[in-house]
Length: 386
Image 1 (cartoon, one colour):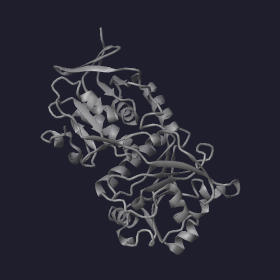
Image 2 (cartoon, helix red, strand yellow):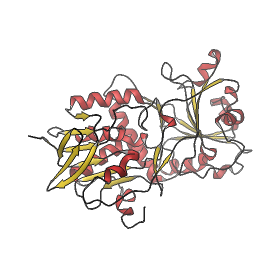
Image 3 (tube, one colour):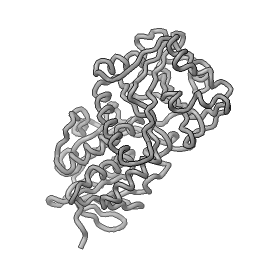
Image 4 (spheres, helix red, strand yellow):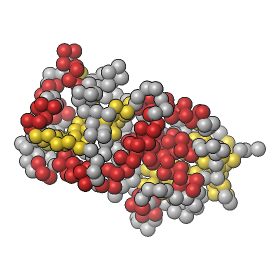
């Protein structure tokens, strides 16, 4: 007889893994259905590093990011190898690049953090030269409780926890049809039928294809794909390497011009990672910085002349965005036991434990403790999403 799971999760990326992690409470049977394999470097959830930060312009996202940070710390306490490197996140601005310094992302996000009573520090040009001589900028705003996540250890930790909790992971599993049947959901796959009392769809850019397979669901989301236009590792000479390791160098960003960067993690990453990307929640200003090389020339003179190589891992893959630039996170309209999450904007990894816990709560209990009304999938029910 086909077993009945308490929770089935479609998608084995980090959101799906965390959903299963929080859903696998004592006595609950959970299965993950992944069309590829967990840890596939071609997906958006895996690679080497992601930043973890609270410095959003939107106070709701800042509060949720800080709540997610607490869950990351709880997970880290379960493993002897640290995966959260707390080096802070420094937002930069330079007057001859973005003359209205008071309107820059650095200053505006600093005001949000201050309003939420989160830890932050301010630096003038002189202060930056003293604390962070790697940069040439006129101001810096440091999100103190921020840093870098090292993804391989996170994946290993989650998989070990899921194994110990008895979670079933089925890879190379193609979902063909999904049929609500009384209090169950019946999922027909290429490996046979799977039955569950509740379902979470965490399939990233494949979400609409999954929704299309749910009997009675006509909803499609306006999902867009995006990616950084450029990401490189800058490898400093050995005699300067200590300037660029975590602990000496923070995560850094000049989001007004579309630049972000991560320090070297010794023994884990080859160099300083710098990306050029247009975050959907930031109105990027057109300046003479149009590449990571231009950023280095203008704002990071300590790296001038350093050898650079292209980043080959996941940062060159697609992100899933939503047209109104908000997450989708909630119960699927018309279905009491199917929850869906998508649209992480290229910034979602840091929220992953909070999102996973929320999806598990929604599917198993029908509610969440967090204020997520803004993210409701129902906002697209009457919209023409084509």
